Image 1 (cartoon, helix red, strand yellow):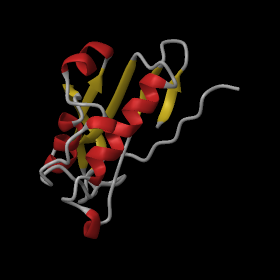
Image 2 (cartoon, helix red, strand yellow):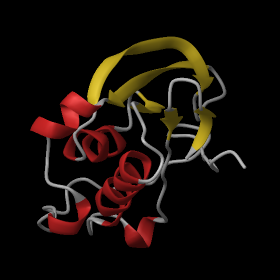
Image 3 (tube, one colour):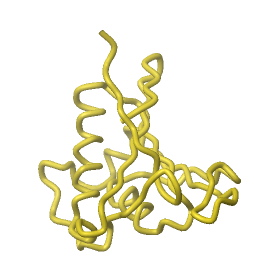
Image 4 (tube, helix red, strand yellow):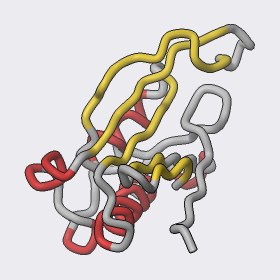
Length: 133
């Protein structure tokens, strides 16, 4: 988690996996756990993530965790070729969660089609967040 806005209780998350750990459901499970922490312990009102528009696996992870596509940020990152590339913004608000997939504690193991290999170039950005002291 990163970039917390404590005024509106908004957070961002990111994820990435090494190639040997993809397609096993780890990313989806981790995102669901982060969502649980954000809502249950930090009283989040909005959780967002950004990923490369071509990273289908990363987008699937977000969607399997209940995130909804908000739009495209044009030329917002550098692609693996060093040229400007578009990224997608997906978010989750309490209403989405209520009608979305099961929480991490009760979630069924995903099909394995939803794990990622992502990073600062061509994927989602790393994130850290801590509650205010």
